[in-house]
Structure formats: C-alpha cells, structure tokens
Figure 1 (cartoon, rainbow, N blue to C red):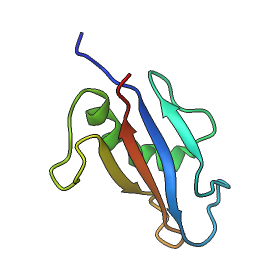
Figure 2 (cartoon, rainbow, N blue to C red):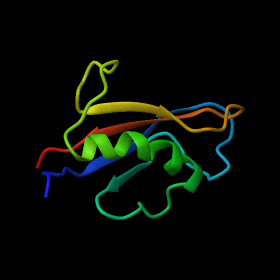
Figure 3 (cartoon, rainbow, N blue to C red):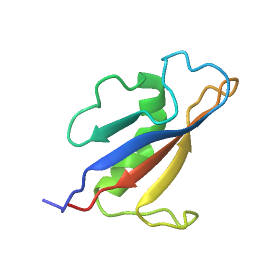
Length: 88
C-alpha cells in the first residue's frame, strides 16, 4: 500500500454567510473517514485536492507542495479552505 498522510482542512477566508455555519479558523482532520461536521458540499469540492495530498502529490501552482487552497462552490458566499499535508 502507498504511503499516506493525514491532512488538515482549515477555513482561512469567508465573505458573506456560510449556510453550514462554518467560520474562519474552523479546522478538521482528514484521515480515512469523512470529517464530522464539515459541510458535504464543501467536502465535495475539497476531495479532489485532499486525495493527492494524502498520497504524496502536489499542485504546481501552489508555492508550498504540502498545501492546496480551495474555495467552496457557493459563489455568493465564498469560503476558502487551506488543505495541508501533515508530516508525523
């Protein structure tokens, strides 16, 4: 099995009203299960970025290979998350 990492998801920016009640500073740990309390619509947007970080991948447009910055799909109330690979 490939080496895997835990990742954290942290809400870093919010404009408007998040319908799920999330606020800047909220944070979740992602391991092998869906993080409790994280909006399912946000999670759906984050998952394509979480998976590569969990298995050692990175994104060429990010300055830090351990990070991805992703927005929630609600364009009227933008919420931005930082996904970070954790090294134990």
